[in-house]
Image 1 (cartoon, rainbow, N blue to C red):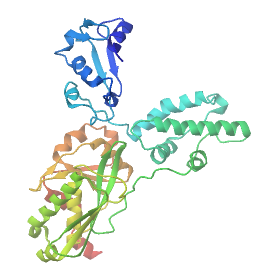
Image 2: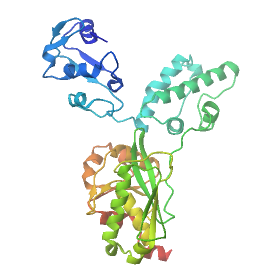
Image 3: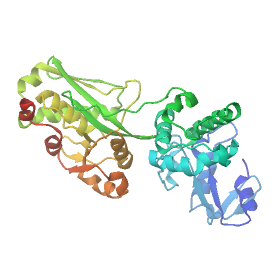
Image 4: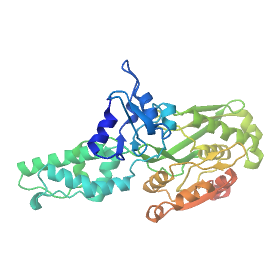
Length: 382
């Protein structure tokens, strides 16, 4: 709106307020003008000392104002405007944080709104039940959907109070189907190491960390052509190509016969093909999957990994470590392989979240393969 910033300063009654520009990625040009062009001067500390408001035709010094802008996506913000801002990425809530928000805030709030916060009518939602609600009925970075599900539970509980003289005041897992219906989402669970070429990776998403299965299989072909399926993005496709070319260059060191590369084709698949998957986190996972398929060596039980690779076999660091570690822990993973450069990220995470996990920090893919793959002798003894 024209004159909005000066009106906000007048309303605040001070020349150095904090002005929040919410959802700045939603502004768009129209026949009335481009708001982002006007914000270029407003947000530039070199220019906003002599900001001129054309609507009320006065000059005003905005250099003392602190502007905070929020956005869900950076892709729709113009580059000149983005250059004038200091970016502070804020990750979504992890499951443990959602549990505390629900326990301390959402449940008491919804209980009060639905009139069931009196002593005789309170509904207790145990931690284990709340975790099922978070994991199976919501998939979001915030807690809006979680609050809606809690509100649904409170409404149905209030109706039970009204219609029945006997009811349980503690919500059980078996009650959720009646209160919320069939679970909407399912998380992948660790599936063991029964097959060659199946490796567990760790992925970051906007709604938290997840485990990711990479599957490889060999079939008769020529020159080891690579087939990729599973709705993979460009970065993951490049990682798969790098992994295969590394194997071709170091086949003898890895115990792979040249005939295998000449007479077989390779198929890599990441399950759940309808879900787009991309990012640089699966390089070492793909390489381990390929080597496992070629050498008929199974992957060690209870191990997962995340990291990118180079053509020289160096393991590079990746992001989203906290979310990935929590996803591994929820899935029953015991050991995690990471780049040595990610050690500082792990050390910043609360000891409570790291408890029960063993971390292996590596520099080269040869270390990854040594840690992750079982020797053939172990399989022969079985």
